[in-house]
Amino acid sequence: MRGVPNRDRRELIAIFLGGAAGALLRVWLGETFTNAAAEGPWATFTINVSGSFALGYLATRLQDRLPLSTYRRPLLGTGFCGAYTTFSTMQVEILTMLEHHRYGLAATYAVASIAAGYLALWVATASVRRVRVIA
Amino acid sequence: MWGGVAILGGAGAIARFMLDGAIGSRAMRAGDFPLGTFAVNVSGALLLGLLSGAALTGDALVLAGAATLGSYTTFSTWMLESQRLAEDADANGALLNILLSLAVGVGAAALGHTIGAHL
Image (spheres, rainbow over the protein chains, first blue to last red):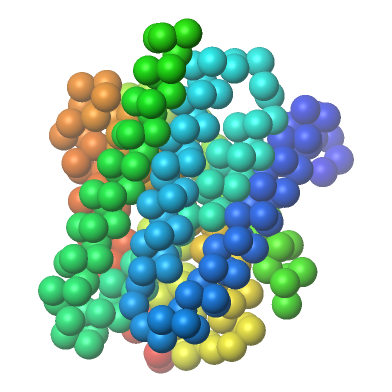
C-alpha cells in the first residue's frame, strides 16, 4: 500500500468493508436457506434480485443526487452490492442443472434471474428519478 | 469461519475493483461494452467451476468459493451496466452483454469443472 495516495487507500478500505459485509450476508443467507429448503437455487435468486434493486437505488441516487459523497459508492455499491450478489455461483448452479439434464429448470432459473434482476434495478432507478422530479 | 468469510469477501471485492479498473480504464468510455465486469465474471465462473470439479467441500468450499469468488463476481453490476447501456439507446449492446456473459459464463464454469475433475 506504500505509495498509494490517501484517498485511493480509503476507497480500497471502503470497498473491502462493504465487500466483507456483503459476503457475510450472502453466505449466511445461503447457509440458512439452502439447509432449510434442501435444494434449489432460490437463495441465490433472491440475493441477486434484491441486490440489483439495492444497486439500482444506490447508483441512481448517488449519481444523480449526491455527487459529493466520495465513499458511499465504493462502500455500498462496489463493495456491498457487488459482493452480496454473485455471478459465479449462479453459473455453477446452472451448470449443475444441465449436468443433471434438468434443462427446463436451468433455463427457467437463468431467465427468471435476469428478468427479475433487470426489472428490480429498473424499478429502483425509476423510483429514485421520480422522487427527484417531484422534489 | 465467519472471520475468514469477511476477510476473503473483502479481498474478492478489492480484486474485482482492481481488475475492472485495469481493463476498464484502457477500453471503456461511457456507453462502451462493459468489458471489465465481463472479464471478472467469466474468470470467476471458471475458477468456481474448477473448485466444484475438484470436489472441494465443507468450509474450504465456503471460504474459497462462496466467500472469495462469490464476492469477486457480481450479478448486480452486470444488471446495472446492461440497464444503463439500454438506456443510452444501445439495446443491442445490453442484450449482447446479457447473453454473452451468460453463455460464456456457463461455458467457463464447464471448462473449469472439467479441468478441476482432472487435477
